[in-house]
Length: 98
Image 1 (cartoon, rainbow, N blue to C red):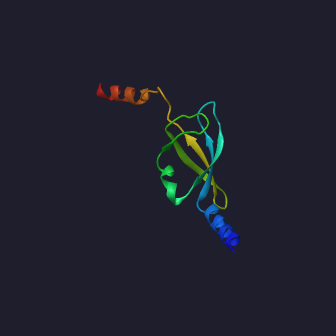
Image 2: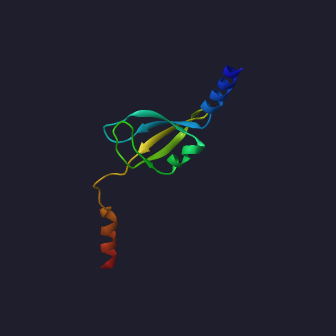
Image 3: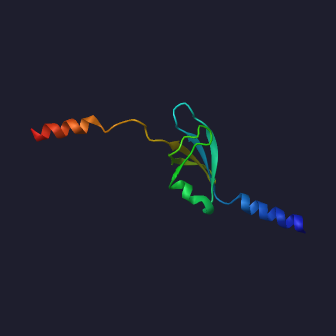
């Protein structure tokens, strides 16, 4: 009787949440991993996260659509480092002042 109960509990806990099949978009990494999102860790969808392979911080999870039941594709995007403001906006502003 106890084994049947534990099986039912394990099935319900395994089906909780959804899985994001994620690809790290850090140049040179490309690591693929599955990220299970449950109500307990749903804050992962809104915050930044670290790639488990290349360990780069500050990645944003971007959904790419549904693959199957409770399975979504996603990519982990990072902001460019060392890139200044866009020069084309500065040049246009300088022209309008003359």
